[in-house]
Amino acid sequence: MCYISLEPCEVWELSKPKARKEHRCACCSATIRVGEQYVSLFTIFEGDAARERCCQACDAAIEEFAEAHEGTRSNPSYFQDMLRECMDEGDEESETRWKPMLAAIQARRP
Image (cartoon, rainbow, N blue to C red):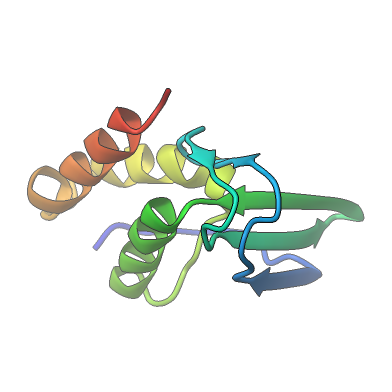
């Protein structure tokens, strides 16, 4: 397992609504279509508020990664960088687990 260090947010509110209009996934940029369930993440970090949306496939990847890293969950827009950082550390799972996960995320890009 690689070492992950993230600063905690003052606010971290995660919900899983169904889309009433189209959105873009902050992780892979794929379209989240009307009627699809997605993740909506609202954060306040160092006084700055942000909202990101994430498709189900990217959310599953983020969750799998978090489970392998003591619950450290990334926001969707930073997740690909987090995967790369983990792979750069030469984590034993890099080739078998994280590299294919990154490739799958990139394959969803429009």
